[in-house]
Length: 171
Image 1 (tube, rainbow, N blue to C red):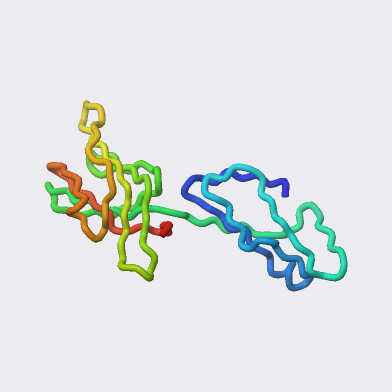
Image 2: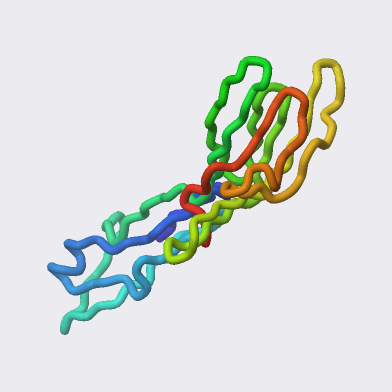
């Protein structure tokens, strides 16, 4: 194609056929949809197959496929500020840093059971505590389970943090 991309880690792509090319000229993609893995860097390749009885020439600039980008995985977290009794809900992409009060949070993985099993979301979360004028200190690193927030509790005098769900998660 002559087109190169650099997908971020939280984004995947599907290469899909163009309906006009297949219905009018019987040209289809060999593997459809073609999945482009999160973090892929390089040229886009689009393997085509001609199902017609005659040749079909593809010119530079022809639209032969379409790319659909999808956000692949993020964790939904809730945090309680015990001084104000406020609960905040926020989303973090995998390996993205977020903050809640003095906490620095990074989700390393988020998994969700398939719909045929009892519901459960679990996230591997790393939490640092960054007090004013001090270096961050390790506070928590481990799996948090949505169904049992107390079983994977992070201990902090001011904040509680727990996982609620995984969006677009691998099962």
